[in-house]
Image 1 (cartoon, rainbow, N blue to C red):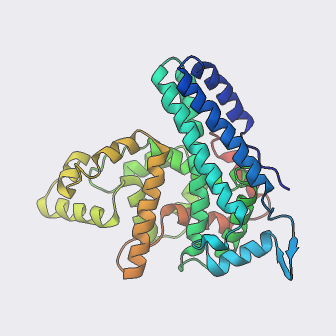
Image 2: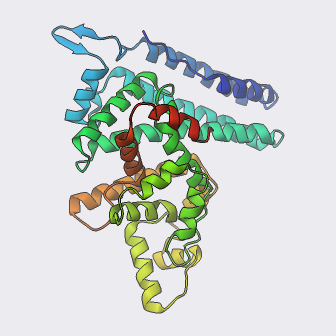
Image 3: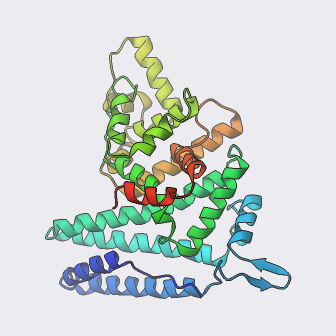
Length: 340
């Protein structure tokens, strides 16, 4: 049995500091805190008791381990939950519950306004956990996408199998940090639109990312799909919306366009105004929704054979990293990316 720890040492420190404050916040709040914490501990114990993908156990004539799980992913993908290991399904429930727990703490502690450093640390921890779940789903998207090379799919399936086994322990020290750093920088970015060339946004996004991000962007010259996926990422708009706004700028002779004017043109004041504000404030849950928004649109374009990116920039970046994997690469990645 491969035991899964409920909390890291950093998380335990945050919980200890938070508990001291919550004890004085009312009986109901403190009770909710202790109950949710104990539920997470119990859930982690249940996940730990599920069959390990490392066990190489045999059930009748069938052997089940990480290798066979990777083979299953290549054939069936991740859409059918009945084909996924119990450890995977329960592990996801654990991560979801953990995210809700830390956001509950963040909301309560933020209302106290007495511990700004603690609030910032909890917010960073919330982002880290959400981004870890997004990294998992990026692997899944690569495996499902028919455009992905079979060798890349196999590499992604193997990585995903290990992630399901170890959760935050293994992949956060190898391939997740590049994605998490990218998402972290995007949370900080406030796109100005302007001429919709994206130069300033890309520079702001890239300045704190290491050379391998630049290597990725220059790896395939004149890659229109990559450029379009990156534009969606930095502008926070669909490819079709960006193209429409550019046509308006061209036809009307406008020198530039700001977000307010763009919202008026796209009639987004009511439907998206609030969500954009949350996203610009750096809420990791919003960039999670933003990722799925782009992923869904990419899939629709592929089905309809329409213009525009058919993979997200996260998928393309992770594919690049998987292709570059070689001896010593993991150690380099671990050391050059900013830690949360």
